[in-house]
Image (cartoon, rainbow, N blue to C red; front, side, top):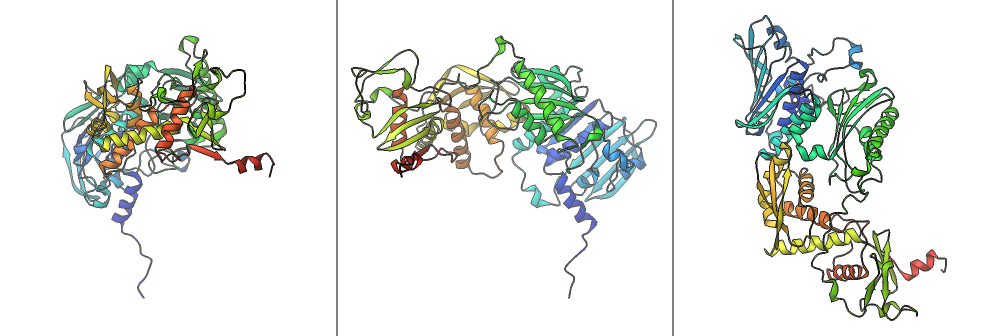
Length: 579
């Protein structure tokens, strides 16, 4: 019998290892840039061709390598970062987890030119993980690595790459992350010889963040800085009113290394508790300086995830510093907890005056508590006297849920989910019938985007226009919103666009246009709906229920969450022990 267990070849082992480290061109950029930073470079230039499919070139003016070291660097588990076991628990560089160069070399063609001080330059060319050429060459001090034909020998990985704009958005995000952690370094990024980023070195972190995110971002962030339990925590947190729809804006830098960590993220969210709506998310640029010996950065191939010796201490320290920063807001900067309450959108195509069968007078304020029923104030009232609808609103709970009598059933309606379903159905219907009505903005809104966001947006501008959102480029990474669907009322078109970009970021390559359209309409409907914590008049509640029932599809919102919870008379009798 032939053996069932085989020993894999060295090349196949390297390709498997490469899959752990190199997910896409941005992964290669990250590894090479981190090596440049560790080499004490003050200039790092990244040149891309065809979003990394054709070429990735990373040039630096760092320490460089002599010929022998340059060859050894491509050996498996070769590193200059550690030499003994104890070093594993005191890592102060960005590199090391066996190093990535052998993995990258196994799935691409590589050309390396490097020169250290007082040595001749060295040229190394590799293909399929094997050295093809080694020679001396005239070169400036530093290192240039060219990675071409990425995934040429692993076509299955190549087909999973997304559009050029999406891949470039990931690459630019990597450069932004490294640039924020290392403002003293001059970074430049080009794609197909077009300059996308040119971030001059600075000692001022404010200046670096301004270079990347712009003035609007800076103006909506709060500076924090404090040492807590031996942990130095500093950086920037968003004002409660400045939030996003997706949870991918918590940027954490541990000892200047960009990381993802659930403990720190949870601490940030808990610090914002009660200050922003539950379906909104804060933005942070959080720097944590901690003793390397109490954190393990070697738990994941890409070094993005870390593990703390004492997670509780880190959690408590981060939560306390962020919360104190939020609480330090002066009254002139104070923001309402309902951060989106200033975005008031009319319910879709509702004519509130069409309701008949009752007359309502409103005292000061809104909602059912402020109403008086004309001519009936001093005598008992049957709900049927107020409206001809079979589902009759009773009032609101916490300005979030509408209670109603539905022919003997008690309905509890989530008003945001209800409006969301209405907007979604009507936007979808108008799009499918090519009858989207557009409302031009009286004052077009200007939106400054990061390079990553701008590259993402370019893939979807035409689709957005078909749905009624007209956007045009207005300078470098600045866009103007000129129109929105008329079903939306007055509000922040800018915030809506940012929410849409967040929502589109996770779409897979090859998704068909109808799925993209559906996703965008869901995002618009969610953003444009009346939020929780918003008082509705009796007429508004009645009209909402009427419109909702007319849809015939009103049990769930587009995300699948329930709109209505129903209690039958029997249910109520059981609750009150009458059965």
